[in-house]
Image 1: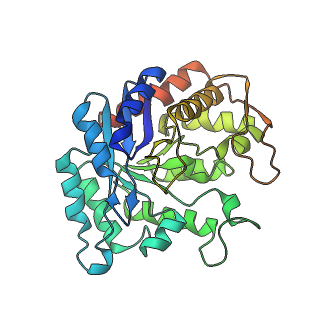
Image 2: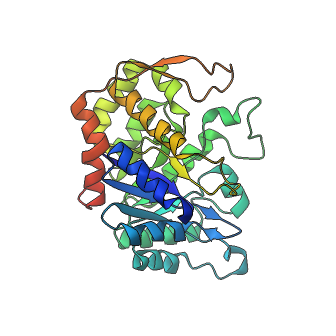
Image 3: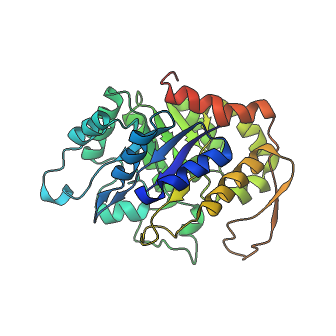
Length: 308
């Protein structure tokens, strides 16, 4: 099994990452960095893992945005440095609304275009976070009228893909379009270099389960373009970016996703949004075993070997 979406943001948790991979039988793992305007990035933690186990880990490095307002923001040079350091790909978190707002640029900004084009020249895939769960924009959600709408973020990502048609782009979290699978298939058809990962962030389970047959058809139709990723997180206890997750929490996250893809059982909804139905049981997708192997092993292996 190959997990293409794990956040290692603390060198102190490297041993737990190793235990995570051992417990799940993960032979290769893609470690994903994030930006932080105080410390710059979490790239150093990933480099620690790459140097310890280059046979097991690859890394998606992040841009350091701290010099953006100082006028010395050379993103092409940063991407070249990431390649020299041994990073496999580039992570762009700037498609996330709150990060975009904090940094002051978006996916269509010129410095981002320079970074993406350089990554393409160097053969580095680009992992992109686009938008957030649509519920975040609904009444009572965390986003209001001061931000573009969910629809505008999806349309902007389409423009981003059209500007970089030759670059291998991976969109995390099924692009938060689990509720629009036909549109998602259309984008995969229009942009041959586009891939998706399954990193659920707990959000997509209910909506996929509610349209189970359509979801099964989507995975069967697009299985060659989907990568297994868990969004497991290894932050320090003092980090404020995300809540602390113990090793057991990360193992539960991964096993829940595997169960949802592979079995005909049920999982407890991990992400109640409006109705607080924390104990609601969701039917799993029960995808064919050979399709699960392709998503969990074959497709990620092809990506990491650079033979898409």
